[in-house]
Image 1 (spheres, rainbow, N blue to C red):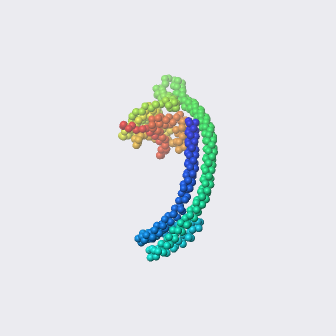
Image 2: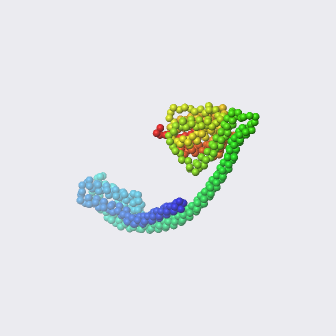
Image 3: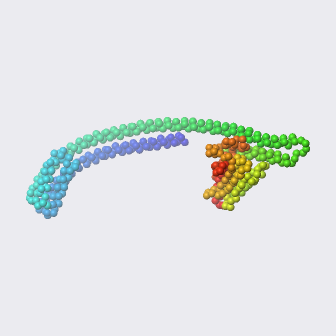
Length: 445
């Protein structure tokens, strides 16, 4: 994948370079076209304006000779004045000053304005002035054309130098671009090599960290087995010794029942620990496949509570209070996996609560899921401990001496999530903890 991505980047960079070179070539061609256009249009500015002025002077002279209508004469007169005015403004004035004809044309224009037909001027005097103006314009036209060509020749020579300079700049930019591309390619190659080395180092560090974590989990599990198995076995051994060492007559049935109940509780703890370890192992291998069906979560909670009470010889059934709900609480879940979750959450609530404190269980329907909330009144946990509560083998401060594997909450959350739900743990108002199981709601129900 890395090689393919690198080739793609090189192709993209090559395409970008090709586009840049094409744009540079286009710019050079446009400079050539611009030079041609300026050569063609160079003679079409002042010569045209001056020629138009001559034409209008001839038109006015003809109108005066033919004794045209006063309105036509006035129109021709105004057009000629406007042409002469144009020659005295802006770039035209500067050009004529350089050609040495600006003052002459200004005098002819002033004389013409003094003979305005609208002011009642003598037509004969106007005709004589215009005829002389035509001759003067014809004389000055050659001078204007010569100066125009000289000016344009100088400008074209300057443009030629600019053109060469632009071409050299383009070529320099192209060479610099190619050098930059070579540098970028080399940098990209070095960067990719560094990234590969970094990824290899990260993978090695990740593998080492995973191996260290696995080794640490194995060590914790060995410690867990050594500690958690020893206590139930010691309880069973002590009960058996009490029964076998008693002398002086038969063993009272009450003592047998008491020790049997204690042994059953110890065996149940061993079985629960073994089942938890096996379930975690199956989850790690993705060997747990939930069979989701519609089930009433209230009924599942009642069943789990009954099972817990049946396996506890010294537990008061009144310690767990289940709220009765009238609304439907049908969840889409696997009953066996859900029972395992509820059993872990209820065992934790009973284990970490004082014997005289009640555990409240409620099941209700939220907007898009079914929730089972279990509230205890124990010592609770700090926010930092709650944040780590779902870590494998983690146990809160002060809980190390209590029975438990440190896997219950981890297992509960993993089993909930493979069913599309979740498990959370929060501080309870007034002390203790609130564990909540969220399961998807059955849409059919």
